[in-house]
Image (cartoon, rainbow, N blue to C red):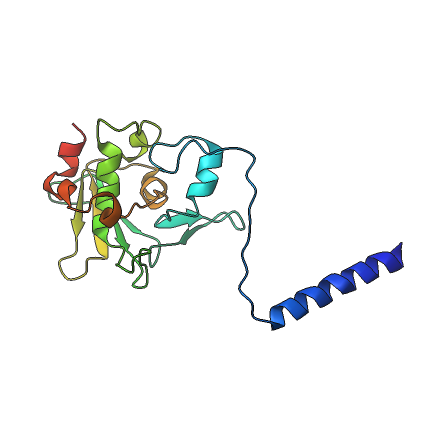
Amino acid sequence: MRKTFSAALFFLFFAAASWAQRNEPFSVSVALWGQPDGLNPLISISALASYVQQHLFLPLIDYSPVDGQWRPVLAQALPVVQLVKSGAYKGGMSLSFEIRKDAKWDNGSDITAQDVIFTLKALRCPLCQTTALRPYLEFIDAIEIDKTNPKKFIAYSKKPYFLAEAALGALPILPEYHYDRDKLMRKFSLARCAS
């Protein structure tokens, strides 16, 4: 039995090594145990759909199951979370993000703060069935994009929210260029999209 196992292990190692030396293209097939209920992460609710969507739409940050810590994905670093001490959002909070410089969509265009805003507006659209995620992101009152860097933004809330970093950070970001080619949603504020 031990010789058979050793021979099989040697054969697998030899086969893998010889295949790797050929530099041939390869593909990986993944079998799913059913059909996802959709590919839009804002309206799908099944675990199977979430499994597929996590490979299609990335979040700003994600939870690492290895060490239980949040890790940057599209974001350059974890957000800076602060209590707001003055201005329109006094007593609330702010979350500052910067999207990685090399973060791009499949068409080569940059992923920017406008994509984050578009995703939030689509989530808040009263005609969309986004009831599973919407309550977790209603705390965001406004997003301000840095005037010199379209990849930097600050999300503001009038009240502190203990899930703020997780809710906004783990939101799958949708490509505005694909879903709103004419940038029609830019005409509406976040507050207007919620009503």
